[in-house]
Length: 142
Image (cartoon, rainbow, N blue to C red; front, top):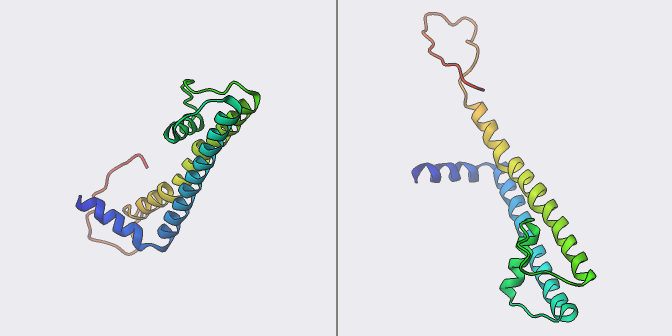
């Protein structure tokens, strides 16, 4: 647990990392808003067009299963407008969850972490004029 606290403290101390966290948090809030809107539209279409009523939890469940492309098929639309809405939710999920979110995570966290790891590596060259030292090194994948 000490290591986790140290890593989080170092992340929060860097200005760039705080901006990255803020951007990722905004993206997650946007995803929550999209899921909420799709859940409301799901309920409206199910009640007014399909004549079926589901709980709000079921609406969130349907939205997540369609956006994640999992699509169990236990809750389906039978009208054309409902199927068109399902396709909109599906394409939105593919773009947001399978493209934008991983890219944002890599850009915000993985790339800065990898750059920090590369900066902390041992130097590859000895400064000119260095004599009388023993250097112990290892060969690694990077």
